[in-house]
Image 1 (cartoon, rainbow, N blue to C red):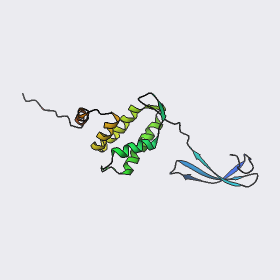
Image 2 (image 1 turned 180 degrees about the vertical axis):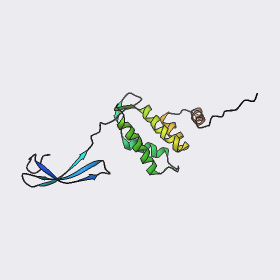
Image 3 (image 1 turned 60 degrees about the horizontal axis):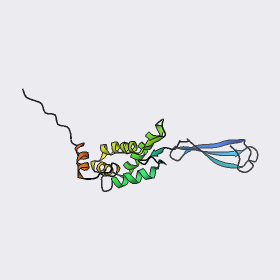
Image 4 (image 1 turned 120 degrees about the vertical axis):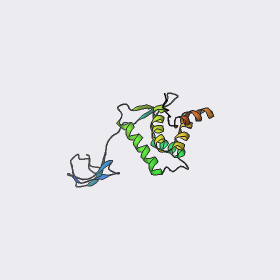
Length: 157
């Protein structure tokens, strides 16, 4: 680590502690040449995720865009903002753990719908209507049909 005062590369760590909710380490250092004290932060370097849109254009994954879309879908439902944050955290973690650092917008949409289907049907339908570009009532009906439990009747012989 290079001293900001004298550019010497020798320093010692005086104190280390977790910062940013455990996502980085804050280190207090002292230069062995000039005794100048400075702070450094160590973070895990993540490769940015690219989202491939329907138009085949690539754009960097934007957490806030996902959060805004989910917030709109969950308006006036019982889903708390903390739960929405947890969904976004989980999806972001899944994306970072993948070997591929590109995802199609359709795969990303399906990941979101999978999460919403378990939580709230209204939010699921709202998000699906935008994501799947519903054109009419039949699209809504088809999607609603997926929520109906399948009925199995025993045949009497």
